[in-house]
Image 1 (cartoon, helix red, strand yellow):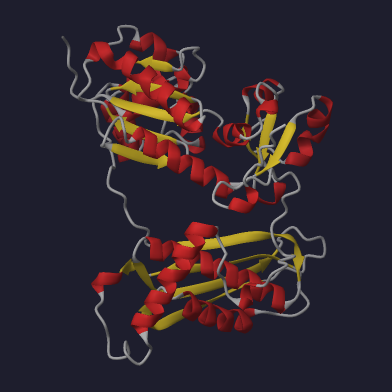
Image 2: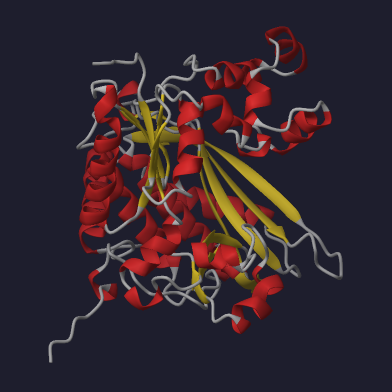
Length: 426
């Protein structure tokens, strides 16, 4: 009976955004599917069938439109409210298998499987995979190893393996496996570092693993040294199981079409403010500073470019949507200039800290702080229960012509009753 010190599993959802769209549209299963970024700009998710057609990640949509039409590729606009909800369901399911979990991204999580016997790891991995598929409908790939970097390698292999689960713990052929992993596929090795390694004759994970410690310390930084140690099976990157609260909160969007009127910019700033305030309230935080920024497109033919921002230091820390919107609109009027076609607007809440850090101040009773806090809680509760923006304020507008372009939207939102699919019984 063998036990290893560290047993880390990386669970990664396969083509996550595509898988979410397929959940409510079985007719596109086993067909080429792509999902586009905000404003239908670039490709951010591809099905296996779309990858075969040589449709690349991050490529602008207009460049592949001919391939899309020729091969009847199904196209969807990004639907982040849907993806966020499905992600929460997946992560909640994964917590059933390990209390020690690091949610790495919207579709990835590291699990601590140290309590599982070595000989039971593959069986346990398959159980995780089957349960997630059964409970959420999302297919996954699982890589298990002694370090986070090696679990990433195992996951990379698992995506191409029929079983969907690869275990590298006690793997005798580890060097052979690493020799088949390209240097750019190693976790933590970015584009610039990839070029540097290749220029120095390091083309695979195996070559990086066997590089001398003195060379790696001299030519890279501490993160590069950690990667090498992790490839050797020595854990240097621990699981971050504690949710770290944000220090800043930025909400911004490019417009679906250029905006010139202050009224439409005000609606957008108001909407972003409401979203940001809701986010920091969910973390039980307040802000001390708000920044509003606007800009035109830097690629305009007439080169009539304009960008500006305005910081507002709040006299009293707050997470009150109404107060934040009031200050943001004052800042917007200060930086707005007529005659420009604006492409993007956003707000940043900074200096975030817990509500409990700062007690009531001299003006708490004057500003009816307790009543305003109860009002914000009531708004959040209603919006969570009945869908986002069920309760809003007038400045956010109704028609929102400036909103992002979503020509290929599936119009599915599991957090809103109005968008739930209707089942017709014959």
